[in-house]
Image 1 (tube, rainbow, N blue to C red):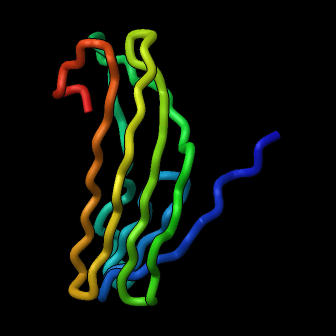
Image 2 (tube, rainbow, N blue to C red):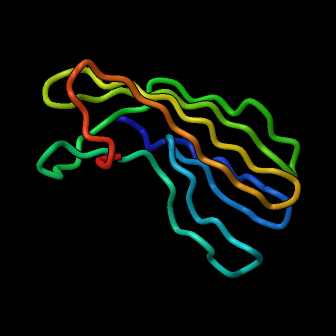
Image 3 (tube, helix red, strand yellow):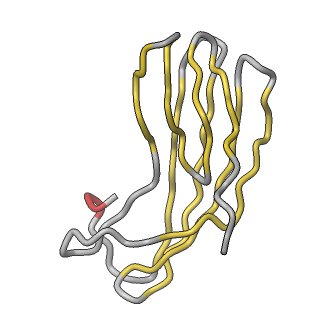
Length: 113
């Protein structure tokens, strides 16, 4: 049995969040939940969610008021390999950004991300 991914508490200025296995969860301003979950998702042409796994995730920087995380993952899209990478950052001013780029050799409909 695979153990669950580690939970890493983070802070971006006044916001708190938890990083878990490629996802940013429980984003809060004090006791108020702002956003439950931000994560990479993609669907095939029939809107079927495609499973993926994190192949590498590294907390690059965490100074207690800001953070930077690099994540890589893979899955399949129409039986073709799909690889992706994401950067998640939180700034001292409370700005949080989640950017993602992916690659596959199969024709891909962009609105499926």
